Length: 119
Image (tube, one colour):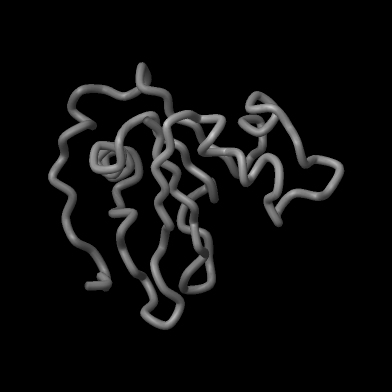
């Protein structure tokens, strides 16, 4: 399983160095890894008028998770659409964290609520 974290630029800015982060884990575990690595809850809502900080998607494969961005994404110029996974990973706005790169202690962290939360 793969979980994608897509930075929505809420509050007017990108939250981390990458706007697309892919973690090879189910969503609940990926949220724990995200918090362990970056010190922020991806479910946080920084600005109530702008919405959530990240949209989160779960996919079976990395190919499926990156399909929209590689083939139809509005951020890509037309000449770059249809890029391979390898080409996409080299984009400076993309971070891919594979399962073997995740330590055991990152998988089950208690993630605190932060900022506003939609209920």
